[in-house]
Image (cartoon, rainbow, N blue to C red; front, side, top):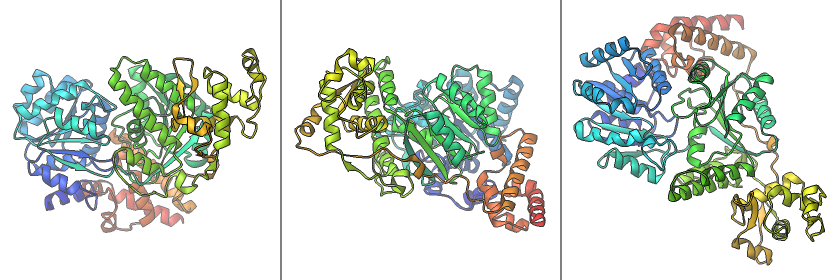
Length: 598
C-alpha cells in the first residue's frame, strides 16, 4: 500500500486515507470486486482512481452524466493524471485520439456513459484494450427502488461475463437495503466485498422551518447565514424555480434557474457558470441532480419537501463536499405533502411501487416533524443507529413539547363536525370563528366548534394539523379535495383515554447554521478574496472549474497556517507535487504580499 499512499500524497495532495478508503483501494488493486456505499463527500472517487493508476491498463469508469464525467476528467488532468471521457459532446477527431491513447496504454482512466458502453462498437473497442478495472459510479441507478433509475444500468451485469477476471467496483452514496440487493443482483456482484461506511455527514447542519412565506424565508436565510457563497435551492415545480431565481436576483443574489423545460443550451450554460464561478446560487428542480461535484457548495435549501429521505439525503449531501461546515435548510408545509401524494397517486407506476413511494413520503414527513435529533432520524432510515448529534436545529434548541390534548380534541371534533369533507384552511377558519363566505355557506358558523380555537393563530393550528398527519391521527384525502379525515387512531384521544404532546410553532430565528464565520480579521478577509480571484484567473486560463485548481479547504488552510516556504506548502491539504511545482511560487508570493500589507 506504500505506492497507494504515495499517489494519495504526491498526486492528490491528501495526507492520509479516510475511513475504509485504504482497505477498498487495497482490495480492488489486488483484483477484488467491491460494492462501496459511502456518503457524498466521503471520497468515493479515490476508491477506483488510485487502483486504476496502480493496475496495468486503463480504468473504465461508467458515469451517468456528461457534466459529471467532464468535471472529474478536468480535475484529474489538472492533477497530472491521464484521463479522458467519451460522450455525445466529444468531437470525432477527439474520439479517435482518445481511442488511440487507450489502445497504446497511455490513459489511466476513461469515463463513458452506460449507453455508449453497451453499444457493439464500444464493446469491440473494449476487446482491444488492456483494462485495469471497471468502476460503476452512481450504482443506485440500477434499481427501480432507488431515486434515479436508469434502465441501461441493469445491463451492465454483462461485464461480469465478458470480462470475468477484471475487477469491478460499484459505488453510490444512497442505497437502502432493497437498492443494495438490486446492485449486487443486476451487476452480478454476488461475490463482491461490501464496504458500508457510515451515512453520517457530521459537517452538515440540518434545519427545518415551517413554511409561511417561502421566498422571503429563503432570502432571509441566505442574507443572514450565507451571503456571497455558492448554494443550491431545490423547488418542486419549474414555475417555482423561475419565480424563486427571479426573486433572489431582484434582491441582489446571483441566482440562476435550472429545470428540464429550459433549452439544453441554457441548462449547459447555467450549470457551467455555477460550477466555475464563486458565489452563485442555482435554483433547480431535481433535474439538477446526480454528479454535482462542486465541493464548495455551502448550503442546500429545499423550499418544498423532498419526496423521500433518499432524495433529501442525496440532494442535501451536495453541500459541504469539502468537509467544511455547510447547511441543509428545509422549508415545508402541509401542501407540499399533499402535492407529492397527488403526484404519486396520479402516476403510472405499479401499485406496489406507489405504496413504497408513499411509505417513503411518510418517512420524510416524520423527519420534518420530529422533535428529536434530525441526524438520528435520517440515519435511522438507512438502518444506522446513532446518538443525538448536537449539531441540528432540534439539538441546539430542543422543542419544548406541551400537553396539547385539549387543542387536539378541538381540531378532531371540528373535522368531524364539518363532515370530514373540507381542507385544513376551512377547518382552521371554523376554529378561529371566521365568518367568511366558505364557512357561512355551509352553515358551519353555527357549529359548536365555531370559534373555540382562538388560543392559537392560523400558523399554530396548521402546525397542529401537520403534526397530527405525521402521527397518523388524521389523513388528507386527496380524492375529496384534500379533505382532512379522522383515522381510527384518534378515537382514544377523543375519548380522553390518551394524551397528546406536541411542539409549539418554532422560532426559526433562534437557530443559526454558522455560515462563513471562520475569517477573524480584515487581513484574512482580504487574503481570502485575493486567493479566490487568483484561483478564478488560473481556472479560466486552464478552462477548468475553480475547485479543480484548489478547493476552498486548501485556501482556508493557506490562510490559517500561513506557510512561508515550499516545505511548509507541501503540508497543505490538496497540494500534490504537480500543483506545488506549478503554483507554489505564486502562492508564496501572494501570502508574502498579504503579510507585508498587514
